[in-house]
Image 1 (tube, one colour):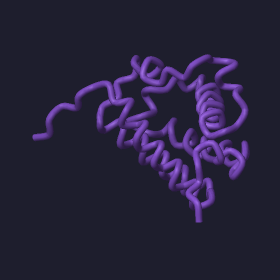
Image 2: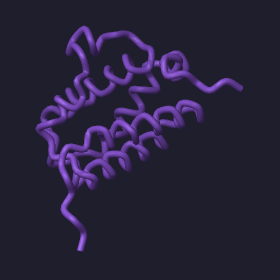
Image 3: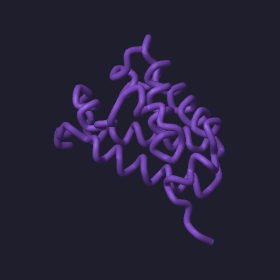
Image 4: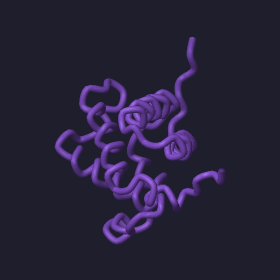
Length: 132
């Protein structure tokens, strides 16, 4: 069976799949001790919308994100946030929880998990202090 291509994901899970996934992720943010402080609570709906639109665009859906925000420039947009290995790992953990809750097809899970893990690592912009 051929492996799912990135630009085919939107056709497989649709806007509803991305909406479930991103909503499940953002439900965890307000109470999270690591990531919660990085978010402005009154902008959580905006952050949710931006991530959902980015993912929809990135994986073969409508280009609403690009039309509204331009090029993603992920590193630049995340530069103000202190993303070290602990924050990266926590983001991935919460997104893995969201992937489980969203109940997406197996091919979609594999593709998204790989994308999230590698992109989260790419966004690390602070060295973590050495553990003692």
